[in-house]
Image 1: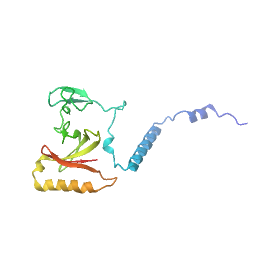
Image 2: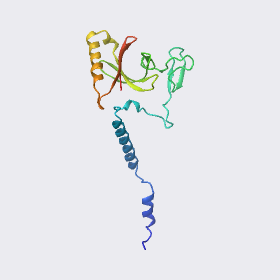
Image 3: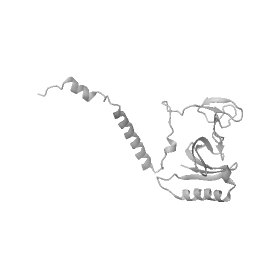
Image 4: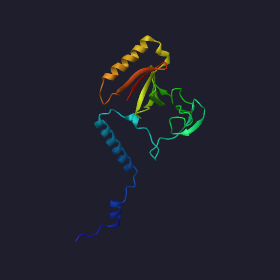
Length: 182
């Protein structure tokens, strides 16, 4: 008949490890599994859709101001409760908070380059996040730059590959030329 294991041996097999590195390994494995599932889905990178959430699963509230009535709110809402205008984060870029082309709500700026800025946006009716590249207003009147931006949109729209952001839309609204992509 086998003897019972010593108490110390039993504790080591039933107690959680004391090292926090095991938690990091588990977190890394979970991230890897998410990335594999995303890659298998064929929907592209999807990195823009993974915005940080609060522990409750909600987006964090930020201080916003209504450009129409001037009221300030601390809210996760996108529109002013009193007049329905798009709220803008307090003290921000002039495009942030606007609805471009009647369908893309600009959430925040995520980058800038030689031809313009890239914003995180969301389609108002479909609640789908996207990247919106807006051509610099200084270049809109330059025929060569405008043609180059249009070629970029056309060429990028033809490429379908998991490592390339898919192009959804291209157009002009209120004097701004934009390109909407994954």
